[in-house]
Amino acid sequence: MIKKLHSINSKLKKTVRSSSILLVFASTFILTACHDQDSSTTAATSPVTDYVAMARGKVDVEGGLLDIIAPENAVFSQVNVHVGDIVKHGQVLAQLDNQADRLAVSQAQAALEQAKAQQTAQAIHLPATALSAKRLQKAAALGIAQQQQADDATQAAQQAQAENSVALAATHIAEQKVAEAEYALQKRTLRAPQDAEVIKVFVQPGSVLTAEQRVAFTLLPKHPIIIRAEVNESFIPKIKIGMRAGLLPDSASTTSKITPITAHVTQIGKVYEPTHLNSDAIQQNNRVIVCLLTLDSSAEQQLQSQHLLIGQNVLVKFYD
Image 1 (cartoon, rainbow, N blue to C red):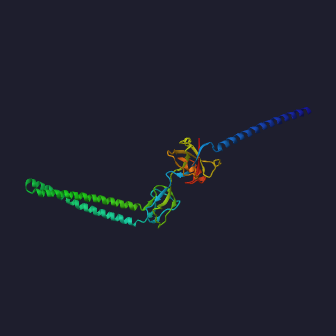
Image 2 (image 1 turned 90 degrees about the horizontal axis):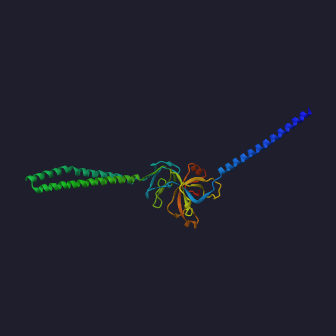
Image 3 (image 1 turned 60 degrees about the vertical axis):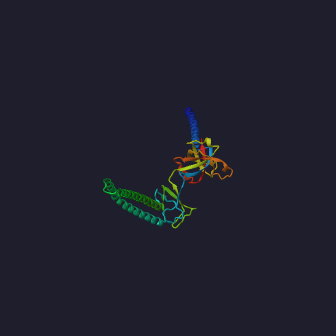
């Protein structure tokens, strides 16, 4: 009986040792797998740092902002929009005082009616004078009428035809004056040239714009957002169409941990020009090439989340 108990005890000890060894191997395997997963996750989420060039840029909209210009000394009688309004192509933004222009249209229309009446009166005599000249020429040929009378009748017919041509030309001129007056009247109504958002309003009813300040509204067109990057001439050989780029706020450092907004190069300028974005007096003498970048499909939401607005300066990193 005692021998059996010793045998059972030995078997239990061996089983415990085997289980302990298995647990150690299992724990080691799990820890190794977790470490590998963490390493791969860290590598996947870490930002790309191998940029080959960097430049200053500005957030812009394709085609730029739209300034709506009003005629000099125009008086605003009505303003229909406010900052933040979304306007459609052709929508009325403001109405200028147009009393003088409406009177000009009325006068031009009256002059046109007068010209048409005169041309009609001239045209009435054409058939009679032409017929009289023809008959007298036949009579003169037969010796029934004097040749001088026939020649005078022919000259009168030609004179009537010329006067009718002058009256017809006067009618065309009057029509052009009506069109000109109507065009001037239309210019007294300021309309949105395309779909846009109103971002600045400089007028109100009663405002008068001078030669120095004729901008009434500034509109932000519904066009794609772009980045204008000023690339130093030493970096130009490294920049290529389609090249990836990352955007950071201008205040961010080159080693910032902020996730860059993704974009790509769509156009490389062909003319060197002085920098407009560098405030350093020494750097202002450097020549730059302006490159255009387009945001990637999901980047506009990033732009809003980082509060980057139209006209804001950014740092642009170009990746190989």
